[in-house]
Length: 190
Picture 1 (tube, one colour):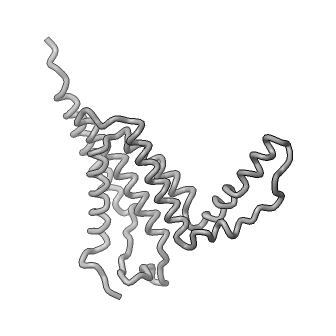
Picture 2 (picture 1 turned 60 degrees about the vertical axis):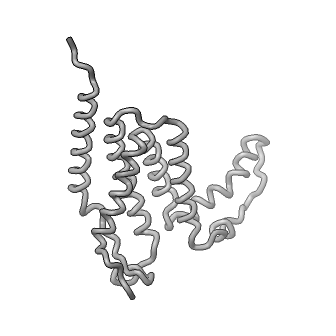
Picture 3 (picture 1 turned 45 degrees about the vertical axis):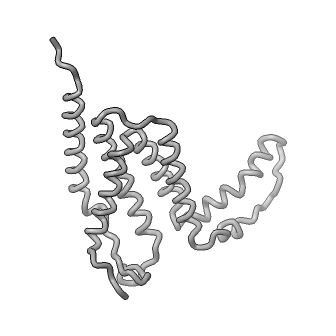
């Protein structure tokens, strides 16, 4: 196996830095909507319970039929073909769709951030989103008995729990900068 010229920690921080830049550009309102969708995707569409989600989706027509007509339209829906329809990439694809929908909804609902404080506060939900996306991706890809990825690029994904203190420090710095930027924009009282 070949490995990247970067360590797992460097890759983790580069990914978090990308999310920080996105959060700064998009503002806290848009990033909060994105965070909600990312959390929804992480908790609903993980590889372990993808069959449960697909089972629920297949049963929706029979539930609607039960509510409208009082009788079920199909007694025993076939779940297995739906769970296997997208193959092993189904959960990852569904997660990506949920994340993209969250970003699009966040962009449509809220305008671009008007103040620097809105931008700096956007860093906080962006970092949390980035950590959850990295955790999801780390749990999605299969690993060997040593905990390393079985793909040709051996990249041990870092545990975001080890970096909580760094993320908290970055969040505190972002809040301080946002508060300073908000105070600087206020006109002086006479």
